[in-house]
Structures are given as structure tokens and as C-alpha cells.
Image (cartoon, rainbow over all chains, first blue to last red; front, top):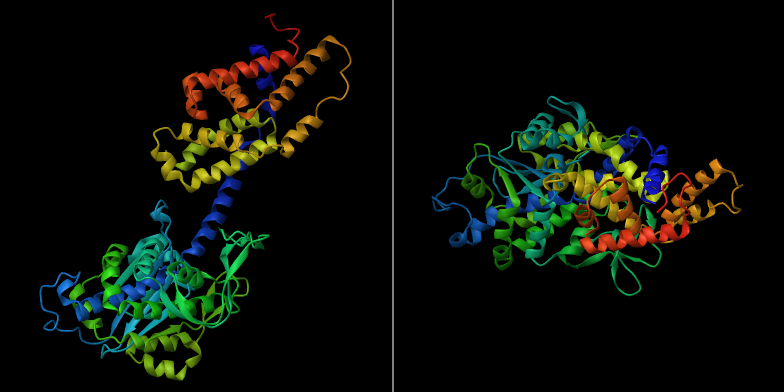
Amino acid sequence: MIEQLRDTFGRHEHLVPDAGALKPVIDRRVRIVRARRRKAWSVAGAFALVLSIVAPAAALRRLPGESILPLTTPPSLAPAPAGPVNLLLLGVDARPGGDPAQARSDAILIVHVDAAHKRAWTVSIPRDLAVEVPGHGLTRANVAYLAGGYPLAEQTIAKLTGVAFDAGVVIDFNGMQKVTEAVGGVTMCVDQPVTSVHIGHDAKGRVKPPFRDGKPVLGVKPVVYEPGCRHFEAWQALDYVRQRSTLAGGEQDRDRHLRQFLGALVKELTNPVKLTKALPVASAALDLHLGGTPLIDLATGLRDVDPDRIDGVRMPVWPTKDSSGTVQQPDSAGLFEALRDDTLSAWVAAHPEYT
Amino acid sequence: VTYDEFVDARLQALLRYAVMLTGDPHTAQDLVQETMIRVQLKWRKVAASNAPERYVRRMLTNAYIDLHRGSWLRRVVLRAEPVEPPAVADHADAAAERDQMWIWLARLPRKQRAALVLRYYEGLSDNEIADVLDCAVGTVRAHISRALATLREHVAPATTGEPR
């Protein structure tokens, strides 16, 4: 019987498919899965912005005794750096358990603080902008972080804009989620009905994804964010700002929501109680790249920025027809020049369509 | 071991194993494909276990056991059963009996079939099989003896085989 069994197995070995043909199929599917997962984490840039501006600044301004910063000089005596400040903020999609070598910067933001250190602007660089990455030719902007980490990403954006960065901040999704939870959510104003493709409820109230492979799932009602201002729990806020495919303006609308979310989070963090809760979480979540700038100088340079006067700017771009990426519009040269010359307020006044 | 090295060395063997489990090349290929996608996505965890091969064989076996019951696979196998007994001829008889073995293998409960394949095709010890199926060694022996009993009851011994 056992011989017969062994013989039966052996006789059916001719059915075995060829492994050589299967390997590329597996690799291709893995690339698709990874691309899908990356989209979810693009909100990360939001936090990089808020934390880099608000945490150090507010720490000095409101809680000098409890500051997380290594204070050697009383802040009031520290000389503020002269001139405008430029920061590069990267939201990356690295996740716990994920391969850090596979991380890309899914959100790229420049924070520009004017010479008086009163106003700030956030400029979003589209992650699929076609740029010259040193050593890698013309490719998407988010490839730079994957290929060379923060240094190459900074080099790439500096080369694109001509801006010299005083410091950089990298944050991942996990850190961002924890900080929103720490402040207990945010207040935001919804400008168009937004249907979530990620969170829905079935008839019994259980949480289920309302869409699978782009098709609605029967019996699951997606969460819809109706126009108007209200408080968002952390999960709602994150879900709202990550929606892209159901928006009329697609990625541009998503980036605008992201900048609105930043502003909302800044306002929450001006509450000292909430800030105290967020600071330990934030200091663990951030990866700071200070270059030659001492953190204390950076913080003193930012402490007077008014949270109500942080404005978002989108970079003037055209999407390419074949969705292979995004290219610069001639207007972007003017934007970069304004960044270098600290004349952003005049440029924004002349180009209100990009705010 | 890198993922590529592992695939180059083991993918063909995994496909063979999957065919013996499922009895069908297409289902086997789907099973291996879905498993290897997960393996590649979590490769660091797989590589960190001291025996990636064992880890992946466990994943594949679990995926097989969890395949939906009453899938098209079973229906196909049932339809493949010869409606009439084959014409009586010594050589044809032996072939039909071996096919009969293949058909009855497909009707076995999946854990029993997996235990048979692991012992008589992959050549694992009972201890190793218990590790793959995540059960006690006694349970492995029970699976195998029940499976063999079923086969003995329904499959005529091969004419060329030794009498039991």
C-alpha cells in the first residue's frame, strides 16, 4: 500500500508547474501590494511640519521649565539666527516590521519662516514630481529618499529649488498616529463631502472596509465626512486626510486637506496641557537632521511664529497625460525665487490660486 | 539567506509539494504564489526564524488546510472519476488503480492528506510533521493510520505490488 502510494506521488510529478515562470509573477504582485500600501502612509508629512515648528517653539515659549530641549542658555538670552529659516520635512512610509530600506518619502514639504520669524509657509512638493536626483537621473522626487536617505533627499530638493536648508525632519506614519491620539483629535472644516474608501460600517455597526479592489462591498456603508466644521477623533482625522481617490481634485485636494490638518494640529498644540502630552510622543517619533544648526538656535528662531499665520502653498505643476508623474509649471521658478529671497508673502499675494 | 537565494533553491520543491497536497497544478500554483507573496513581504521575519524552509512549508500547509471546503477543486476531482469501470486488461487495470489512489487521496480530510504527503513524499519524521501541522506526534500517527485505512478500504492493491 505504501509503495503504491509513493508510486502514485512519483507518477504525478509531471503535473508540477515550472518555478522559473512563477517567480516573476510573484515579484510583480509584490510590487503592486507594496505600491498600494505606500499610498496609505502619505499623510506622514503633516506631522513632520507641525512637530518641527510647534514642539520646539512652544516648548521654549510656554514651558521653559519642562522643555525637552537640552537648554544650556536661557532661551531669552539665546541669539535668534538672523534671516529666514528653511526646513525640509519628509513623511516616509516606513512602518514597524517593514523594511526600512524600502521607505520612500511620500510627503515632501518645505517650511519657510520669514526673516522676522513671525510668519511661516508650507510648500508641498508633489511626491511624483519629475526631478533630477543626483546620481539617479530624472525620476520621481520620492525616489531620492529610497535611494539615499535623508541626505540625498535634501540634496535633490535643494538642487531643485536653490534653497539651502537649515534642518530637516523625518517622521513615519506610526509616530504621526500616536501624536494625534496624544492631543485627543483636532477640529477641522470639511469643504466638500468626502467618502472614505478605507473605513465603513456594516448593518451591525462593525468596522469594515467599504471598498475592495475599487469595488463597493455589499452591505458596508462607508464613512462620509460632510461639509462643515467639527471635532475629529484621531482615527477620523487620519482617515479624512488620507482620502484621495473620491475627491474632485484628487491629489491636489488631498494635499490641501493635509495642510489644513497641519494648521488644525498646530492650534491643538498651543494648548499647554495637550502639548505636554504630545511632547514625549513627538520626541520619540521624530528623526531630526540638524546639519550644523544647533537645535536651540532653530527653536529660538521659530518660537515667535504665530500659529494662525502659517499658510499652505502648493507648487505649480502639471500632471503628465500618461500619469507617469508630474512636471513643473513655469510659475514654479517664481515660487522658488521667492523662497530664496524671502519674498513669499508678495508671491502668494500675486498668485492666490496656489494657496 | 536572501529572498532570491531562497526562491532559486526552494521554489520548485515547494511547487512539487503543493501539487502533491492539492492534486491539481493550477490550485498548487495559486497556493504557492499567494504564499510566496506573503513570504517576500515579510521576508525579514521569515529569515529571522532559524529555518526559513520549515517556516514557509508551514505557511503553505496552513494555506492548503484553510482552502475553502467544497471548492471547485473537489468538484473537478469528483467529475474526473471514471463513470464506468475501465475495460479489464492487466496493464490498464494497474493504471486505473493508481488513478484510483490519486482520486481517493483527494477525498481524504486535508490534514490526513498533508500528513501522508509529508511522510511518504517529503520523507519527514513524525516529529517534523507534528511541527508542520502544529499538533502532537500522536495526532500525526492517527492521521496517517486513518488515511491509510481509508485508502486500503477503497483502493485495490496494485497487481504488481506486494501482498499485504
